Length: 244
Figure 1 (tube, rainbow, N blue to C red):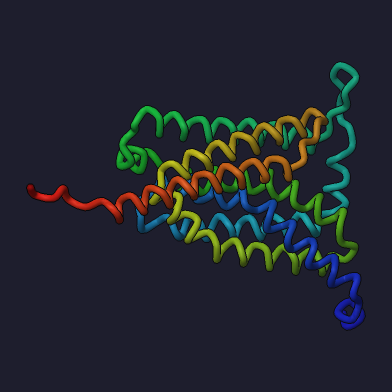
Figure 2 (cartoon, rainbow, N blue to C red):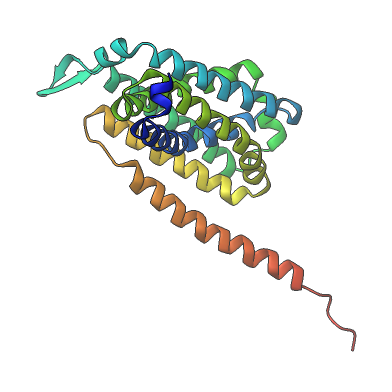
């Protein structure tokens, strides 16, 4: 252990992997926040913490099953001369689920579904179940990334734990901001649709760099931030008309 702590290469891989795990976990945090919003106010924080804790446990369990993870990348059948592995199948199905979930939420927002009605329709167990499904998909992608960057299981586990802790701290303000600004929720849902499409594409062997998706969403988020700032300044500057 002391040899690892004294090795600069280990620290470099740890920091790199931690940053990547946080970046890859952004979509997970957004999904958990939006899904938990279907619950009563007093249950949302518990759902977010349980969801991220389960994500941590799933990722650590997968890290200690590296041999099995590597086996998931082996082809199991071929369609039109394209080999499909269990990883491809999981990413494809997870992408479809994410698109369905985001599209359902977008439909509810556009059609003006009452927020209270949506809360009644969701149960704590149903929300946790949906979070677990996406945790497995996102964790699989995360663990494969970790295996490709770090050589030591201790470094991988430490990076995953630190990344999840950061996400736990960020989950509350992210959820509060999305709930307070409906337009940002629509952007977040569009972001999830894009991630879902990238997972489906990965399932068919067409890898789309997440950096392109994140760059597009950062740009859209910056524009939305300017719109929110403008709206806030207009409300502040608004004064009653003077009496003549």
